[in-house]
Picture (cartoon, rainbow, N blue to C red):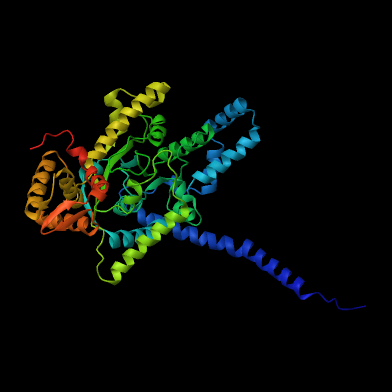
Length: 473
């Protein structure tokens, strides 16, 4: 006996959707992943033929594998045991917490996103905003870095544009892995940041367990030869001067470094400077300790007004790029040579001894960074006005700037002179300061705007360290 069974249309739609999902999941998705992985591996092989520092296998490892390795690292497991005994927290709870930390920290580097998307976006951004220049690069010393060495670029931190500009300038050398703060964890920015190889850091976290997880990731990445970029200052300079170093990440790197091992650890000092820092007013006039912070809405409103003002200038054809941005790459510092010269093995030092040794190393790295900071037109002319007693005519400004350039060059500073024309350098610097009303002009005389003197000092402070110990002419 035969008959027919009527089914509602919605059930048929659900069954069809499930069948389609099963086909995608079991047949099409594995094939697509295999195809994309094959294309990505070919791209990495092609990119590695052009890079001075190749992308290591560590960065090509699947993120899930790195998370598991970090979560079950023996040192992390010991930290879990110690935390459980100290606080009475169940080990299962601490293990889940460690996995959350690991997922938060570990990046998901994508070579296509870095070299095809990130590089071109960075190039478009920096060349639209600045006249970007490479001041100098000690190429001979950089070429002597041992193949396979773990290279860490250490640099001063003046702007959030540092991430973009240095990655752009170093793109022919390697892909850089940055440590970024919690500002970058906002969706969807965090996905892009992870795909570019950056890892998240909770600044000032008091959790011993978190610090151990972070330390083991940094040590694993260093041991795996990942090229990293670190800001020893820890944050943006608020007054233009170099800040006292915060050496947590550097401490993690050197505390597991084996001077007799097969892989050297090399620090490359990088100096960066701008004729205009995008966040300068926000940094200089940020609330001090105990003062109320600005709301997020107010910060966004300020950013919108800044963007609208510059769009208005573009429409009226009165917009200039924000002057020059310049980067210098100084001679690398080999930790194998450093350890040998100082009779050090950081792994064997007691806690207090290692703290002192890392502070000494950090001081030397910061000195090398300071020496590499380029001198740009705005910093030159700002210094002239900070030191001036009153109004100056154009001839006096040029004369004082010329004398300042001579003095800086005697001190070993790299002074970027646009078009190799000192008069033009003065013109560029003075134009920027007058356009921003840091300097005012009346009847052919130029004087510092008293209401903007803190901003003049900010730009003058960028090169103050070259002058502080030198006698005046």
